[in-house]
Length: 107
Image (cartoon, rainbow, N blue to C red; front, side, top):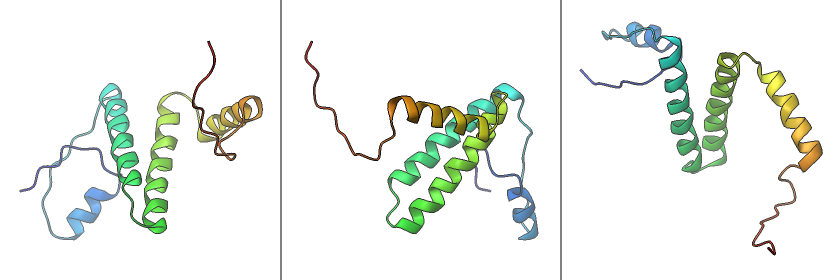
C-alpha cells in the first residue's frame, strides 16, 4: 500500500474506490486543515514553477486558485473579498504588468 499523507481534493477517495482500490483517510480538525492547505499551496506553487508547457502551467495555476478559495474561506473571507483587496492594492501600488525589476535604492 502506498503512503501519501497529504490533503487531497474532496472527490479523490471516491475516484480511488471506483478503481477498486482500498484506502484510508481521516477528517482533519481546523488547525490541521489550515496547516495542510498551506503545505498543499507550497506544493502546487512548486509544481507551477517547474511546469514545462503553458498547458501544464495553467493546470497548476488552477490548483493554486482552488487552494486560494479554500484559504480565503478558512480565514473568514471569500475569493471575491480577497480579489477586492488585490484590486485596491493594484490601484495604490500597481500590478506587475510593467515588468519592473528594482535593483537598488539610495539610502
